[in-house]
Image (tube, rainbow over all chains, first blue to last red; front, top):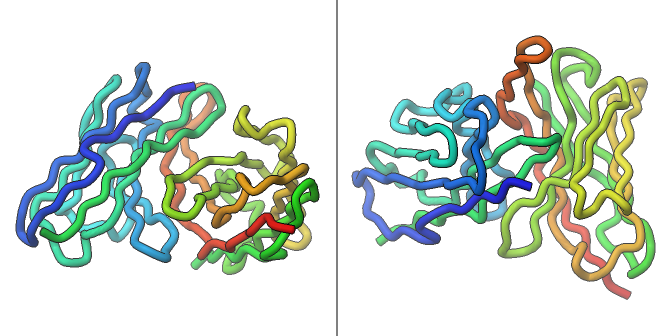
Length: 108
Length: 127
């Protein structure tokens, strides 16, 4: 089973700042099978990025994804008030999905 | 626009079987290249994938739950269901259903994410 590690666990930032979130896999992941989600309290997760770098429908272009192999990154170019949330990476391999533990982005 | 809605008991006794149904509206469960997934989230914790099913009946389960999980599909009702047997307090969580989007052709499939989610339903295991 591929284990995903996300860092940092929590980020305290101000609106307007640039954010870089890391997702590291215990073994190589196909970029085709790496996704990112945003979750706000009391809500279901929302798909942001699939295929490591493709924005899902309706996702603002301030969100971008990159990476390959074992290291992947989600970048928010300029934090908006509605972006304060928990972000999860997810991978698919060997007929199994796993999620990272999440990174919480909260207001400084 | 496709929507998903989970339904089922909110309270299950230990050792019994948890049963949930996800109803798909706004589209056919059989159309497109979709798998249908169950995911759960204990309060204050992260997401755990339980398993998924294709409308042909083909499915995969999380190995950590495989011995206790059954996911089935009813295309005539546009629903898919989860059964989790021998539950304990550790199975207390919010349970989500979601649609997985796939593209491409064998052997070059591309995963396009879980793009539609239900609102989630809280299941508590307690006597």
